[in-house]
Length: 312
Image: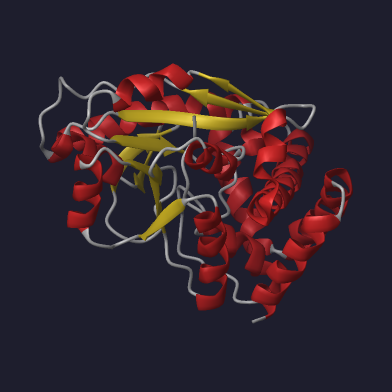
């Protein structure tokens, strides 16, 4: 209940405070969270060890860690402002590169699978795609807190996005693609369900594979994309070329190869902007650690359920 009330308060404040003022308060809260939430801090630190180049000293690494929390707080502000009806106003701060790749993929009449990482501002990309008239469903993990789950899903629905909870009916997903719809899946963190082994930043882990398995089964184009926050606070949507899968079979090995082709694209963006990669669980867990079940864990846990697309 406390976590839910905090989100409601944050949404109300974001609706009337100027965006720069909202960012200021969000960053101050993120600094408290960085100090108080040992679980998330440890997870970010562990993940960055795989991402940052060798030779980065402790001081530089710590700066990146803190910036992850600050940038994530701004992402939450942007999401709340979007869901409060400011989407059209925010469009002036967004540029798009590669939009023609989505249009070309949809001309194949097999639907479209979009994939991205917890990077930059994926919720903005999803809302932009939906507001542009595309029929979009996003795959989301069901939050343990029923009220928080509804809080996020109702806001996505305001954009015209339908949420598919993880583990739902496969037939509805296949039918949606056959009808020419778009499905979006974040694929840089395994959050329940069945995943598969894949090499990510040179190390094996378990990651989602549904995006590739669906593409192989249906022939739907698979396109990665990212929404990167620029230095001036604007966002740039970058649509990458379609992932080539036609040379693969349909066995487990083919799925892993397809997953790793997507991950190569993910790595390029995350390496360049590690402070915009928002994963607050260990991607390469060394041992099982208990997740926090208190106020400090509410923000990151809420956003762990936020699956959305890279957008146009």
